Amino acid sequence: MTCQDLVRSLSDYIDGTLSPEARAEAGAHLAECDKCHLVLDTTQCTILLYRAAQSPGLDAPRREALVRRLEKACRGGDEPV
Amino acid sequence: MSASGPAAEPSRLDELSCLESMRRGDPTCLGGFFEAWGDRLYRLSLRLTGDPAAAEDVVQEAFLKLMAGAEKIEGRSRLSTWLYRVAYNASIDRLRDRKRIVAVPEEAEDETPPMPALLVDFLSPEEMLEDAETRHALDEAIAALPPSLRAAFHLRDVEGLSTAEAAEALSVTETNLKVRLHRARLLLRERLSAFVAGRREGHA
Image: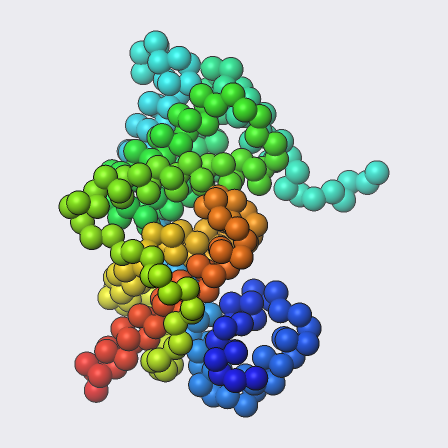
């Protein structure tokens, strides 16, 4: 397996969707190739970073106002909020 | 048979029966339904539009469409992909409207994954996130991706949808979804590597 092959199957390796044979080949390459190992580590770290840095979502006042608008629309929009 | 069924079962029933009652004009459980979905749709739309007001508008549109819809949505996974799809399409519409004003990165013609060029060690995610500049770099790196790659990465890697669910939400094949995800991961890795390398040089 070349470095290019490894990079091509990197996402499948991370997601655990390689066949057992392909996974073993990738594992053998990773054990020997520091560069590919670093690419794997930093790609996994990239995913974890975005997961951990998840934005909080709507703030409370806007959320409440939006829910009230939706409740009104749900009832048919003809009732006072 | 026994009480050992999947723990997620009750909430699955709740959301779907809640949807039915909302469609009958009863908003009693709307707050709870919003609690479950509002932020998820908001975050996807915010990633795509970069505009909190537009993202809020998209959430409202998705909920109104869901409540006004007549077709039966079977299963929680269907509900999830339906909502994400409406939010994605509504966000893309708003991006198109704005395209004359702000530059939106286009999808590259070349579908081959980019080969990693920069090789630097990262610190642990916890250590990196102590630094406000890292958060800014994360936002900038993902904003530089075409929206279709951003959405694939966000739904799969941040929101945790399966390949099949994310593909359905974005109306693409699973193969196409996997190609987009792979490109997105490698491009983000490269940009964050550039950020880390730049910081290290700056501190040296």
